[in-house]
Image (cartoon, rainbow, N blue to C red; front, side, top):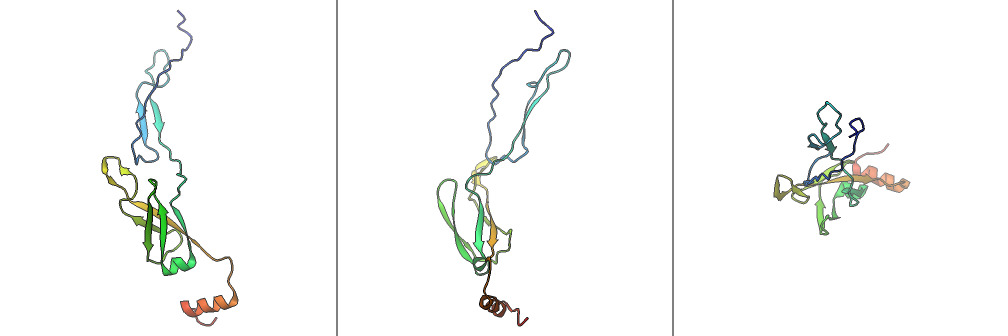
Length: 144
């Protein structure tokens, strides 16, 4: 026998990923990490990370829509199309919350979480002098 050489042991460890686990959640397998003679085996720890889904929840909105309201169409992960009314004035970075429209909650799979939609207000690249004057009149900027 050769007691001085380390040996590799292959073992399959299964991780049952739960819906809505947060980034940073740790899964620990005690005594499954490296081991040295005379020491207890180390724990093997996996840390959950998130990968953005291709169906982003960011939503572009024109300045006109942000000021006057709009209906936004959003395709859910299960393929449904939601028509969401946005009636508040939207500022850059605003989030709209749609109740019960996201993945099931991990400790109560019957309940669903709230879908959060982040808005990005897209400003026009340029305005004519006439458009600027019209905006000043409408928005109360007065004569400047």
